[in-house]
Length: 391
Picture 1 (cartoon, rainbow, N blue to C red):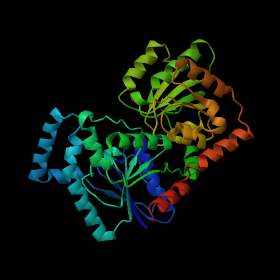
Picture 2 (cartoon, helix red, strand yellow):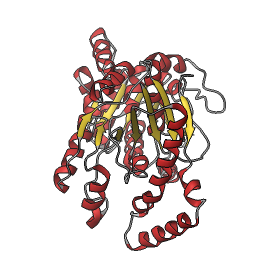
Picture 3 (cartoon, rainbow, N blue to C red):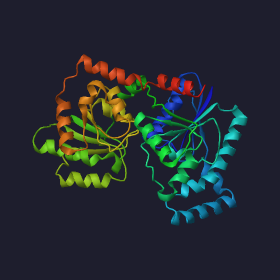
Picture 4 (cartoon, rainbow, N blue to C red):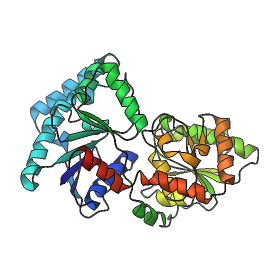
């Protein structure tokens, strides 16, 4: 079958890597897989499978190539001054036309797609005026029911009424169902299908060397993700500080990732006199050696759609600690892994970090991890898409 995965861009981010993984997974399972991206930005992540065909649909460029498109852009920017956060929604009347044109042009060349999967609201929000039974909108995170204030019912209805919607965890699905009930939205389908993982590739890439100047010379605890408030890295830094000042920990803290909170977090490290033991390594194209070489991985988020970083860390045979936050974390931290959950509290996280560092992995723990990882294997995920959408 011919399948397209659509994503906004191919920057170095979690959602972008998941989109690439899904395109690779479809190809590995014998489908004619295509990856479509909508913004002409530098490509930081790309498919590993040579069977995946890459396409750029530069929607904004197409819109700006017409006088009416430029005019509509100005109108939408003006509306956004009064109706906050609405620019993408109204501008989608133009970008949807561009997507439809580009899609039909591609399909005349290669044949029709059987399934078109859009990853994230920033992606499907650009095409919502189009109605197509092949479209599947994937919600990656916990929903804010009143994101658009008084316009929330109208905008969410535009986005989701009559759609095929996939949520990446039961927690994300519950959140989405609550949104539909709040705004009286009727979807065609609401399903839970998680994100795919190629464990063979993860293990192979984990064996790669970390190149200078990023290599870390001492044992470390790892935090990895976007440096934004939602990821709550300040909690991790403060918990680490509590352990450090009480001489309960010898490892450094290494943080891999970038974002608007980096300056604030670096200032916090300075204020806590941790500059000799907390290190920011920036974004890394290949995160897996960082997992593999860590003594422990810690997730400190306030919420997670799924918690892919936990899956990746466990796949690299690294112990994990995670906040018991809304979303999909509880679907990963099951069985023996429940013991490594903590509250969003400095003292509780510090205790769980100390516990995890001293924990001796046994057969029961390894069996639990293997059972958890099985449900996120790429072949399982593709099979779920096949069964759910009759491929």
